Image (tube, rainbow over all chains, first blue to last red; front, side):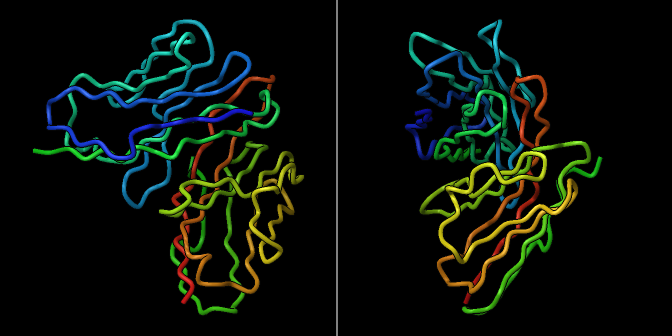
Length: 115
Length: 116
């Protein structure tokens, strides 16, 4: 069965520092992978997605993620974090073969940004 | 595009009362999802619809929960009777299923439910 693991529940970084949020997935075929962000009191917003092709994908707000099949990982990165990036980040994998767009979400990583 | 619309944004009710949450998906989307988010359990998929038909309701916690989608532009999630443990943020999301490829889900702002 498909699953997503985000091993870090909470991360704190200093403003201007680089960021990497980890995501590992379990899926039998080529996965469809997503990163969503949830700001306090808001719904989830798509940051980026990977379907196929280039394993390094660019998203909004300066985020990028790299798909590594050998490690079953899809880690999210940003070279320089801004205070406005403080939010909760969810990794998700597509489940259902594209017939339903159903997603399996990880438990999320809460990012705090220190001034 | 107005995005996914949910109402009400906040609901406070007393235990035993009926609660109805409403969702209007993005026009043209044919797939709709209801989620529940709590600190303890994170983001849980409750039920999803394709072309107004419920496909998988295995995430619905118990018979007190029911969901309907009478047409492509409206869905409801009903809790009857409500209990304090139902307190959570409920999200609706919609998506376009087409061509066998995944498309993103667009989330509404959520309804924060408090059952006293």
